[in-house]
Length: 283
Image (cartoon, rainbow, N blue to C red):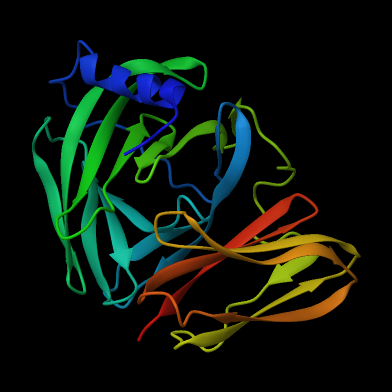
């Protein structure tokens, strides 16, 4: 695995925390509607995630939806645990458990023929977005492949760092939590709004799809549009649009014939405003 030296050194500092054997059962993982997280590398903006709504899933439980190409999904809190809902097979799994210690297993996740083991990698305290905060790092070990990754969660902020292969490293550079701004925030004017008034991104159709699907969006004013497809780990699969567009309804065909089955995300950046949705390629 190759990463930038500065990023690698920053992340490896986690390993030598004096509180490496601590645990934080009272860790606050914020899921309020309107929260925003922005991620980047070396303070450069990369992507945005935000909580948009609460949804009752088929299991009868309520989950908060977070949209974004790096940090996304349906989550709920129960005691010391954060559960994530898998929309592919309508099941939930333990994403994080703050009562665990280093080396403990959070869950064993099975997707199709892939098995992922999630364990606690490290815990500690450090400065995150201007304050000393407790954090825990969870390691996802893809037992049948190389899609391993580290996710760091901070008290009062939530998901803050992702380190994965090959050489992917992003950290939170700013957040708006319960109306309070932390760090650097770019192009966030109304954190209580799911859809900016000047454009709309629609759900792809058909979904699930094999191998093609249509992605539609609407813009009310002429502007620069960038439409990118990402895989489940946030890696850029392809850029469908990167140009100036006139106002109106638009449609783009995405062909996944050369991709494997799985969850993908399409993200539109319109004049600096970002919106994402997920889709399922099922062969």
